Image (cartoon, rainbow, N blue to C red; front, side, top):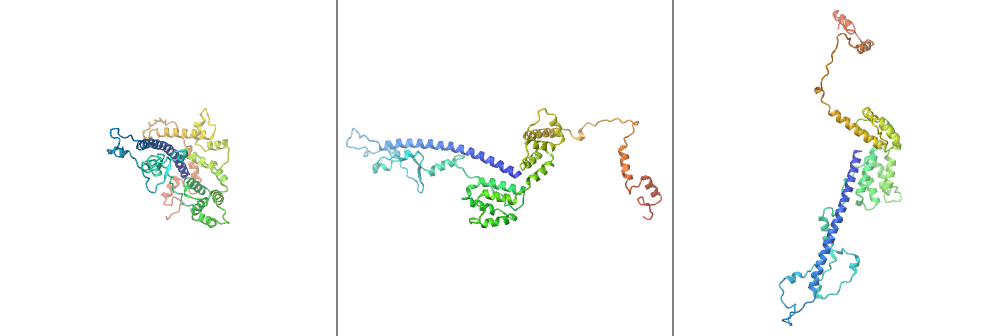
Length: 372
């Protein structure tokens, strides 16, 4: 049961972490899109400057702009991006923008013309992976130990652990038959003897287990306790409180196999409580109306009682009560008379007077014979 609670706790923690990662991924994606749009605008501006019409110098009309020596900044403005090898280019804009035909350009300007709507997938994936939560990785959980046989609670706990593991690791299997094969292989001992015929019939017309649902039904029929409800009823009626938390946990475990109504469960839980807790419950004006409220109230009462018990001073530090006894009052010898009557009823009993007399006569104080 502790393993099942631990697994459920880890499942809830994993779901919360996944939700956080999805939120962070969406924010990172928005940042990437905004960055790409800014880059696209800048590239369009640079490309427009490079391909725009050039006005010849008025002082020297015969000299063209291309023949005029330029200092280097103009060459830096000529942006030429070549896609890396083995990287596929995709558009992150809508399909309508991709369908727009690119304007025809001269061979001279084709090297500087850039499609601002396209970036390599490798760059985008790299930027997302650098962001916390940008890449969602499957949760790695160790598979449960092989099932070695056994019925009842042991089989039920293994089935619950394996079911939770399959939910987290379902992407490792291509088909349901692969999942069933893994379940059948993950058995040892008497359980392996049961799984071997089913494993041999996988992917054949004789196969009776082809899906995880069919495996659950067959496994339950083979290893679960058919009389589980009667056993749970017997245990829950004899269950009593040691500590309230442990009592409540075991009570919850047993009631999962019962079909009792809330009133019956509440009455049975109250019956097994410690009398101190019952006394405190009886003094409450607002009595719990359901099982959950009764369990919560009992746990609170027990916790307060334990705190008060721990706050008591040690026994040696407690003030001793000075009791004045009068010699005129005879001591209560009722218990002594009862003990003497029980001793006299014993056939081996020998009174102290008889023991002394036999000792004086050098006889055995038990049997009354000489010589030993």
